[in-house]
Length: 292
Image 1 (tube, one colour):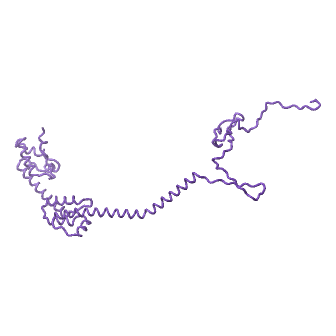
Image 2 (cartoon, rainbow, N blue to C red):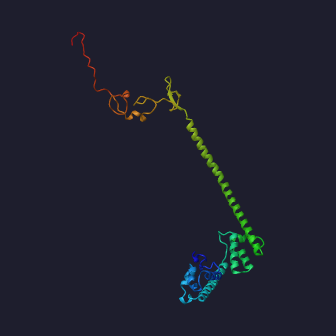
Image 3 (cartoon, one colour):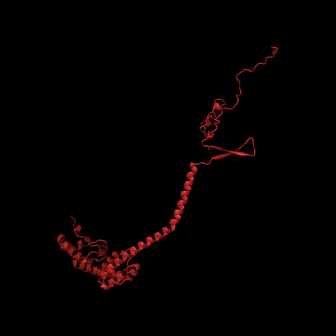
C-alpha cells in the first residue's frame, strides 16, 4: 500500500490543525521511513497552497528537519494572525442577509463569536441591531432582551410574527382585489351566457317566412301565406342529372360527357341540344289528283 495515502495531505488553507498535523507526520515518518528521509518525504504530503509555499523555500531551509519545522511554524503563525484579523473584521461588519433566516443568522453569530472570543454584550448587540430592519422594528415594540438567550428566543418569535403578518397582509390584498373584480367578472359571464343562449336559440328555431300574395278579386288587398323553411322544401330537379337530392354545383355529372351531344356537364337524359343529322327520310308530297 502507498504510504502517502495513509496520512491526509496538508493543504495550506488552514482548515485543519497545523500543529496536530505536524505531530502526526513525525509519528508517520518514524513508522514508515528512516529519519534520513524525513526531508524528502515532507513535500509528498503537501498539496495546493502548502505545496506552493514549499516550492518557494530555499534549498538550505529544506535540507534539515529543524529548519523545516521552524519555517512551517513561522508560516502557520503568520497566517493565523492574518486569519484572526480577517475574521474579526467580518464579525464587525456582520449583519443578517435578506435571504437568511433567523436560525442561520444566530448560528453564524455564534460561530464567529467562538473564533474571536468576544464578550456576551458584543454578541447581544449584534443580535439586537444587526438583524433585518423589519425585525428590529418589531423588537423595539416590546422590552429589549437583556441576555443572549433571551435575544435568540425573541428573534425567533418576532420572525414567526413577521411571517404571519405578511401572510395576513397578502391575503387581505388578494381579497380586496377579488372584491373589486367580482362584479365585473359576473357581468362578463352574464353577457357571455346571454350571447350563447341567443346563438343556440337562433340555430334551433327559424322565423316563418311571409310572402305577399295578391288577390285576383281585389288588387288593393294583400293576403299573406306562410311558407315553409327552405330546408323543408323540395328543391327543383338538377338540370344536369334530373335528381333532387343535391344542388347543380355539386352534381357528379358536372365533369361527365353527354352521350348524346358529346359535351361535358350533363347526362343524355337531360340533354337539350338538337340533333344535326336525321336518319328518317323526308315525307313526299302527294297531290289530290294522284300526280306528283
